[in-house]
Image (cartoon, rainbow, N blue to C red; front, side, top):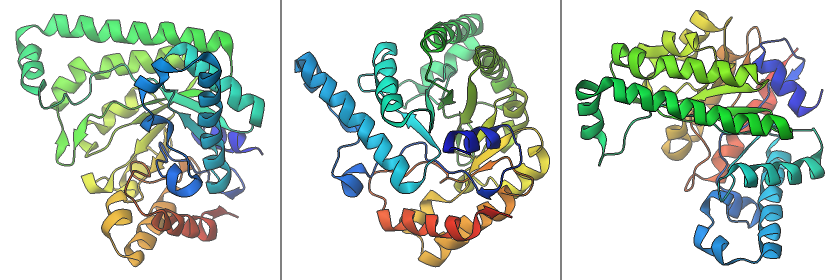
Length: 317
């Protein structure tokens, strides 16, 4: 099986032989690993000054960073972050990756169109609007979904994109920003509509949110994504419990504690990786990853330590 085939088998909760599939939502340590600035860290102001031949070099360099990451760290999927972010630039980047690697890797991009936790400067206004003008908020939610599905139709027509990672964060470590009832009114119906629309177009859907998702876990699963990411242990999410409740309905991704990767001991990193594998693997439907991403400032050696555990213990017989 190719990496893409293994990744899809996990998303579909089909049994596979060999190693558990692996990817990271973002691997930001491209400078340390390859001497390349991560695509998301490149300046848009520079892009506006480039000639087209320079832009093409930029696209090819971004594609190379993604492929080097996938090859070195054995990722089965590539989550692209086009820079600048547009349908046109997404398609161009996909075409370059496919020309270099064929259909070897599963390719996804961000595709969420639901309300996430507002920034601190707009949080109070958003909370007031939920009470003062709920129908207007719902109309905006519906419009965001419809715009996203229009873009998705363009990706389907072109080909090359396999799925979407929905990266709107809903939860703090202590729980969701919205109460479960409010989430069920202002987010869950539109999340379900977005997922259904993507599925109808033939795409796979991974729903990402950090934090304590347990009060809204039922609603997330009912929205019918193929997978949930990141099962955040810093938010009190226990992969064993999520697997027990919903392992037969949704693929699980993540749960290796990012906080421990950054500030814990090596023994704690090993134990966190081992726990995720132990409870995620049974019955299939599990993809190994951190509980967020490999972010700037994390030591590359800690990520490699986590992968050592995966290579030794993340193998189906």
